[in-house]
Length: 326
Ligand code: FCA
Image (cartoon, rainbow, N blue to C red; front, side, top):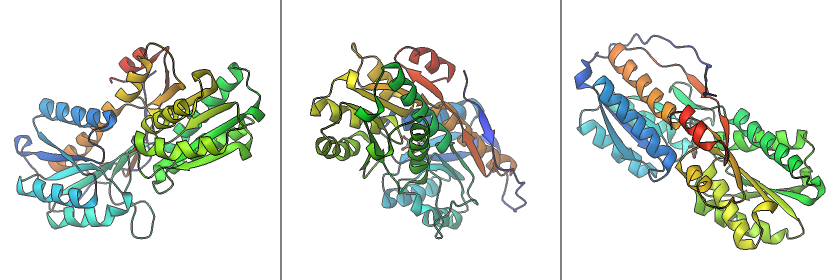
């Protein structure tokens, strides 16, 4: 099954006086919050490949905090770039980033994590492409519920480790979707425990998960979910350290990146049961293409594009990987 695109916004034609560029002159930045994570490496690779095909240059940059993002933008400006795609390290930096881009006359689009305005609402003036977080979260919850049934678990014996990141709206949408689907399927609400992580990576998830497991030692089974597979893997590693065996744990992530491929390639199954795979190739390619078209044809991209996902497990991961062009 291929992931499909659901375009929510309407595209408006920019009527500004910005100059159009011959394609060889186009240079764009691609700034990501976690340059070491497979998801982001793949997005940047896909954007660079598109640039090679279409004849524009992609400058890959890290933006792990506000300072680094602002210097990346300065750097892009001094190289003559006309715009950038960004997954920001903190969505509340939106107005500052958009301002800096405006000062330099650069166009900006977000990928994955959408800017928040000063009013705390999504900044709709900046075109965005990202996951449909709530729906993909529901797929996580439904997958866990189905696997609990398949294993014959009594709901009373099962706790959920919800590794949460409520500061980041897409993360909250994803874990809310998973929670709702689980509760709809009969999961005991009081058995859901939050493990708030400080970041969106494995080590922050591991640190958040460990105390929650030790405080609730009376459960025979655990399910684990979070905004992404890197975080679920942190929870799974914590469950192993705590002494749970893989058949006591169902972890389901989101992304379908190299982190999941490595886990599925292990000789023996772990508590990481599956992940909802989304095409990072498409995210990187499409967001770069949207920006390129905006720069060269003055066509503003859709305000919001939401992408969907496919369940990937140890059994089908190679096929799904191929289907999604990963
Ligand atoms: C967020 C997460 C990433 C990925 C992306 C689509 O940025 O941190 O792992 O899921 O959304």
